[in-house]
Each structure stands twice: as C-alpha cells, then as structure tokens.
Image (cartoon, rainbow, N blue to C red):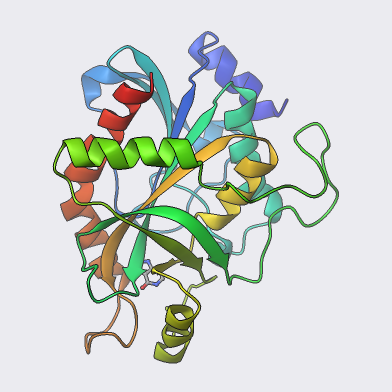
Length: 268
Ligand code: HPA
C-alpha cells in the first residue's frame, strides 16, 4: 500500500469510497459545500504532484452523492509537465488501495468531427495512444497487476452502456468515440489532425490515456467522458488556446457534473 493511501485512511477515518472521479481542465467543483466530508491537499499526499497548469486545483476531496461516498481528484498531472511515470501511476494506485472499484475520468478535448461541435460530450469507447508514452514502462509491481495487461475492454462496456442510457433518459446528447492522445504541450498540427481522422479518431487531448492504462493494469474499471472545447487544429480557421479550453469547459461544467452524478446514483 502506498504512503498516501495510509494518510488518506487516517485523515478520513477509514472511508472506502467505491467510486473515484478525476476532474479535467476547467472543471473545478464536483461537490457542493454541504456534501464535502474531507479535503486533502496534494501537498499532504507524497504520491500526488501539485499540478502546474491553470484550471487544476491539486486536492483530493471526499464527499457524498446521495448516500454514496465518492473521492474526487481536483486536478491531475500531465506528461507535458515533465512528470516521472510514478507521478502518473501512483495516484491511480492510491485510488485502488483505498477501495475504489470504478474510476470516472473527465477531460477537455478537441473535436475531429464536424458534427460534434464545442460544448458536446463524448463518452470514450477506445483510444489511440499517440503520446509515445506508457506509464507502465519500467519494473512491474506484481502486487498491482501483471507485466502485460489486457486493454480490450479499457473503457468498461457495461458501465458505458449504463451512462449512455442515463444520458438518454435525461435527454442529454452524448456522442461516443475514440480518444486520441498527443503528449502536448503544443496543440497538434492540421496534418496530424487529418492523420488522426483517417485512423478513426473522434477527439484529441493530452491526458487520460496514462490513467486508463494504469487503472486497467490494476483492474480498476474505467469510464471516461470528454468535454469538447474546440474543433481540433485546421478544422476551422480559429487559433487554439488553453483559455478557450477553460472557458468552454466551465460553460459545460454544470451539465457534465449532473450527468456523472445521475450515473453514480444509478450505479449504486
Ligand atoms: N488538442 C489537444 N488537447 C486539447 C484540445 C486540442 O484540440 N482541446 C482541449 N484539449
């Protein structure tokens, strides 16, 4: 068990949340204040690095959605920040250590499809890892999983279907597609985006894939949702910026968080 897992248990009097959420860029507040039980800054957790990017707070918050305890990472690390593998691996293993069974990941992404405009939500059904990086490279910790781990149901099919049904019930449009990861920090070129379109990609971003790889390795089920904040490079004439990502994510925040909370209520 990692040190942060023990610290988490001490600080929360042994809460074992079954569900974890990671907030992507520009999503700032999963819980309303009355539903928060504990807030632990990443500074108090040796396995969590303080995010360096605007829009990522750097704290672990435990709260409730109705009667269920949920732990939420407010902010994550990205490989473009120059992180070591362990800085991406260990937070996910802490979630596993403290008893989580399901990880719900959110991110901001650029759309590769004309018919999926900014403001859309996309549940990820698979990914293309074009980051050149895999966080499991290096010695394998057998206590978490095998050397070679299976990725054929990386985005858990039945949870995904459940999420799609919840969205339908609430008349919320939800796209489904393949997430492509580039390392960043520069945005992609128009030629790179054309290539990803040919390869069958639906959206592009700079996160999520490392977390999904680590979660699958330790048999933590994953679902992931992209908030589409812009058309990817070259699709429209406008220039890309992180400011636009933050603004669009913030506009979508209420809707995506309510979708996730309705899903959590349904999962039980
Ligand atoms: N590319 C990469 N990452 C992103 C984008 C994009 O267009 N939009 C939001 N995050």
